[in-house]
Amino acid sequence: MTQVGPGGVVHDGPPLARATWDRAGLHRGDDAWLEQAWSRAQVLLISPNSATPVDAAGRVLLRSAADAPDGPRRLLGVLDDVPHFAVTAEPDGDGWLTLRDVGASVGDLHAGLLATAIGLEQWHQKHTHCPRCGTPTAETQAGWTRTCPGDGSTHFPRTDPAVIMLVHDGGDLALLGRNPNWPDGRFSTLAGFVEPGETLEGAVAREVFEEVGVVVRDVRYVASQPWPFPASLMLGFTARLDGDPELSLDPVEMAEAGWFTRDEIRRAADWTDDRTETPHPDGIRLQAIPPQFSISRFLIDRWVDGDS
Ligand SMILES: [Zn+2]
Image (tube, rainbow, N blue to C red; front, side, top):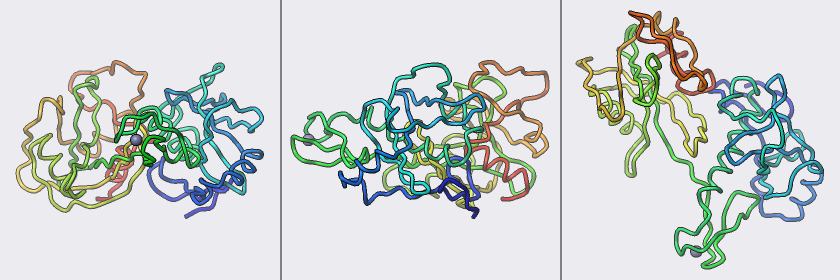
């Protein structure tokens, strides 16, 4: 663990999960504290489609409270004694980019703050009414709850657990698949949502069997990272092939899948979201793997470097 400024602590792990800070949960309901904190706050602006202002070097631009627009103030936490809030704002000029655009350049601390702010923004947008009685709800607890004026019920932000797994054969082959929505040549680790009543290990084995028809054993937890698109917590695992490696694909979930060597994976490029078509020279099936800030890439790189 390494201490970094301002006020964050950085761990080894997936990029969006490296920074931790004082989330100041005990202050969320303290209006006097919040008002005083706002007067000296740094503010992260988030647009409804999850963009934030960045400078030419790809660093997040925070504003003082005096320069921040009106809107609900969501307390992200306290860093080096400076309160940080997120406020929703429409883009007011050039330089607004999304976490997908700047995930590799913003630094661990701002990546973590952005993931938190985006997760809250996405939840507030999609949960405007009480699920019990249908009355419009209001933000409370500095953005961390919504309260129903009709029945007094309190509602908390959703975090949906999803498993993501690097399946290997115990040797030099890893299993990667291509989603039907992705262009030729892009491959990633398999993933899927955890179902009610299911363990994480059970979800890993079920998703692998459903998507590609192979059985796995030795399911091991590696790391997690928030993935606020819109509300996932990605739980990363490795799993080892048990038995027959022949694949049988679910055509809805999987356009193609295959076993690839470490050398083949090392030769693949990062994919970027603005690349709509990947060149596909004859004989090379694996063209690109996910970008550095994804947990999929973290699992892949870790395995390529020899860990399983
Ligand atoms: Zn209600």
